[in-house]
Length: 354
View 1 (tube, rainbow, N blue to C red):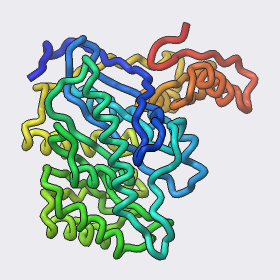
View 2 (cartoon, rainbow, N blue to C red):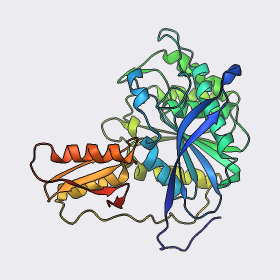
View 3 (cartoon, rainbow, N blue to C red):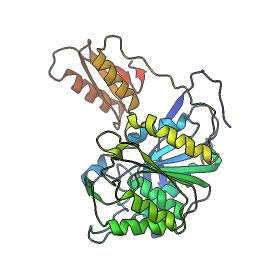
View 4 (cartoon, rainbow, N blue to C red):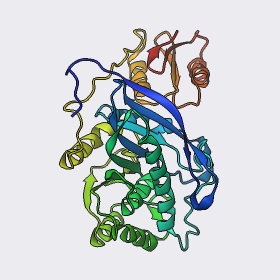
C-alpha cells in the first residue's frame, strides 16, 4: 500500500500528453489527445483509464477536451492512481476518423461500435503501462455513457493486466430524452459482451437517467448477467435534472465516490489508507457570497482556467480551455460584461495570477 503522513498537504501534477496508437486493420497510426493527473511524489502508481461519453450531436465532438474529466481524474489521483483521460478517435483534437458509428437508427450495430471504442482504451493502456510513473501490475478502466459502453466491451476481451472495470450509465443510441434507437439491438450487444466477460464490473445508473432510463437498464443488466457477466449493479439516487450526468458533473464526485470505494475495496484495489489532502486556494477576499460560490465551482473545474474579478460584485471565469491565454481573455470578457469596473485576472489554474 502506498501511504503518506496523514494531515500533510500533498500535491498532484497535471501533464498534457499526445498518445500515438496504431490504426486498426492496418490503418496508419494516429495521435490521441490526453491528460495525466497523478500524485506528485516520484513514485509509480497503478493506472486508471478514464473514458468520456459521446454527445448526441456530432457537431459537439470537435469541441471536446480531456479536461472535461478533470474532477474525476483528481478524485482517482487522490486515491493513489495515475489517471489518464483521453479522447478517442474522432473527438476533440484526437486523430483519425470517428470509429464508433453504429449505423442507422433502424438497425444499429452497437456491438461493433463498442469494440471500436474498446480498442482505443486498450491502446492507451498499453502506452501508459510503459511509462516509468505507472505501476506494472493491475489497472482499471472507468467510463461514462459511450465510454462506459466501450469499457463493458473491453471486459469481453480484456487486455493484459485489466483487473476490473467501472461503468457509469453505459449505453449507446440515445436520440433524445428517454428515447433510444434499437433497444433490442442494445440489449443484444450487452448479452454478446456478457458471454465472454468475467472480470468484476461495477455498473452505476441513477434513477432519473434520461439517456438510458430505469425501464431499460434492468433489461441491459439482465442480459449481461444472464450471459455470464460478473456484474455489481448499483441503482444510484436521482441526481440533478438528469442522472445521466452523475459521473460527468463535478458535484457528482461526493455521490459516486463511496460506491466506487466499496467496489475497489472488495476487489483488493485500494492503494492508500486515506485520501490525499490537496491544497485548496482561498477565494479573493473581496468577493461577495455569490462570487465565493462561483470560485468554488471554478476550483472544481478543469484547466486551462482563469478567474477574473472587479471589487465584490463583478467576476467571471473560464475553464477547460485549450490554452491559459484563451482562458484569461474569456474570463475577463465575462467579468466586464455590462460593467465599467476594472477587471483583473486573480487566479490561473488554481494559483494566484502573476
